[in-house]
Length: 261
Image (cartoon, rainbow, N blue to C red; front, side, top):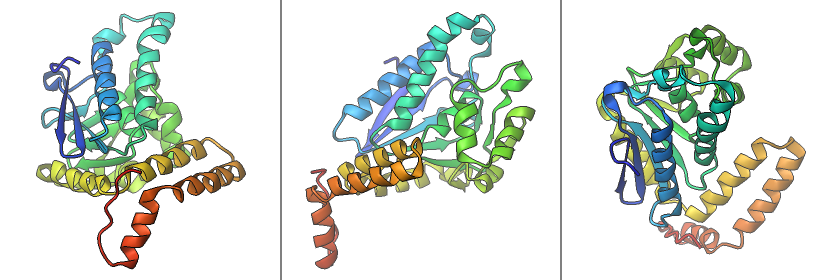
């Protein structure tokens, strides 16, 4: 993994993955996506990591979109087989990661930046952040999952407005739409994100894994099938030591000590 493109740090049980091209506002190109993928795999496979945090370097942009000079050179089949296939695979890996993911949105999240945060579980943004899918202004449309994920996460009419007009929205508006969880002062972002991440890291990693799988799978099922899936998955949870530890700790009025078993 190239530290010039993506940096990886660990704070206790939290992996912090940073898009690290601040001079160009952290755009996504193929080498950056490959580095991001390696960082996610590293965190996924490290048993000491329980939560993943994604952020951007600098104080202006989370990810300001795709690398436009690179995109303008592409043609359809090449894009489909190369960049398009890679970005879809990386974002799907993040979306289905068995560990909770948090986007720490430190600035502009435009185009691919919004599409990246749509793949995460929890989103916290600074007050100065702006979000948007401006691809229509380039004669394109969101092609890294945005055209499908956005309309599943906010009202359809608002998703269409954002994509048809290509306008940016403020962090406050994104919070009102339910696109992000919380807006914080610019100087409090990582403090708030790490507070949330550490709280999640104290929960049972095994139960979080099963819960997240139930939610990701259930989102793609009809309700009847999703409820039956949930029924089966909670049955699995009752076979875990962590479930019995949590209930016992509650009865004994002490903090639970989850071991992921």
